[in-house]
Figure 1 (tube, rainbow, N blue to C red):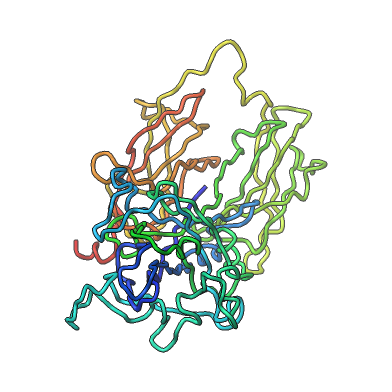
Figure 2 (cartoon, rainbow, N blue to C red):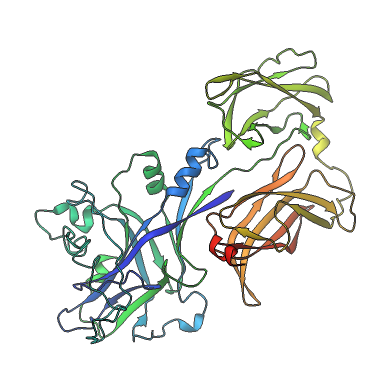
Length: 497
C-alpha cells in the first residue's frame, strides 16, 4: 500500500455576516456561540478550501498510480488539530478568549453551483487577509487585516456568492432552494468527542468521481458545524476548534491522502503447488518503465512447451507503471518439482506488436512453504543495506527514487536472505521523543531478484526523514529504528549551498 499527498491550492475561513478575509492565516479557527459584536446575535465561521489534484491526475494518467488489480483508490482529507499535542488545552480558553469546543460534529460539504446543483460553478479567491477581526485598527497600511474577497458575501471582487455564506442553514431560503443546507452534497461527517481530534474526512467517492469525470464543476469544499450548532443563540461564551492551515510554518500542512495498492510479491522463485501464486512481467524501454497499450494474457506451458489445460488465456492486470501481474492459483502438476513457463501474449507498445515473452519458473512441493514438526523456527536478527538513497543524502523534492534493499543475516556481510516478510515506515522527528508519521508500515516489494520500495519526494515537505524497518518471523516482530535517514530539500535551498 502506497500513498500520495495532494495539497490545498486555496483556502479561507469566512465569518458570519462579516467581510473579514483570513486567507493567509496559519490557523483555521472554526467557532460558534456568542458573537463578538452587537450587530449579530450569533457568530460562527466556515472553512473553504480547494485541492490541487494536478500531481495525482498525472500519476494516474502515466500509470504510476493504477486502479487495476481490483485496486480502489481511497482518499482521506487530513488536517492536524492545534490542540492535538497537549491534553492540558482541553476545556481551556484560547488567546482570543474562546472556550475550546468539545462534543460536536463537523460536516464536509461540496461548494454548490450558483443555484445549488445547477447553474454556473462558483469560483472564488483565497484573499490576502490574516487577522480574524479588525481590532479597531485604522492604519490603512496595516496588511494583517483585509476585507477583500473571499468573505461571507463576496467570492471575487466583482462576484458575490449566490447567497451570503454560500448556503442557508435554516432551510428557509426561497427561490434558490438548491442552496438550502438540506439540498447540499454532504461528503462526510466526523464527530469530535474531546475537541482535540484531527480531521479525517473520507473523500473517496468524491475524489474518484472527479477523477473519472462523473462529478464536474467542483470549485472546492466547506468544513462547518451542523446548522443546529451554528444557530444556537443566547450563549454567554464562544467555542472554537483550530486546525493548521496551508500557511502554517510547521510540518502539519493539511493534505489529501490517496492510498493505493501497488505491492509486488513475486512467487517466481517460491512457486508452490496448490497455493495462490503471482507472477509478474516488467516492461522497460531504454531502462525506463513503460506501459503496454493493453493488458496482455498468459499461457502456462509445460516443460515440452505445450499449453497446460485450464491455464491458458489467463487475464492480467497492471499494478503500476510497466508492471503486470497474473494470478496462477491452485496449480498442481503431476510431477513436482518441475519446470514450467509463463508465456505473455498480446504485447503492444504504441500500436507496435512486441514478440511474446516466455519466462521460467519451478513448481515446488505444496508443503515446501511450511515448517511442520516438534520444533519452532529460531528468530533471526537482520541487517539491511540500501541502494537508491544514501545515508544522510540531500535529495531534491523533484525526485522519485527506487530504493533497493538487501536483507542479510546480522553481523554477516555475505549471507543474504531471499524470502523475508519485511516492512518499512517513514517519518520525521520533532524534538527528542516525537515522531510524525509520513507513511505507516508498508510491505517491501519482493521480485525474483530484489527487494525494493519506491519513494516519491514530489509530494513531501522539505525536512529530515527517517526510515524504520520491521521483519516478521515465527510470531516475532522485530523493529529496527532509523536504518536510513536523509533530507528532502527544495531546489532553491540546494542552489544556495
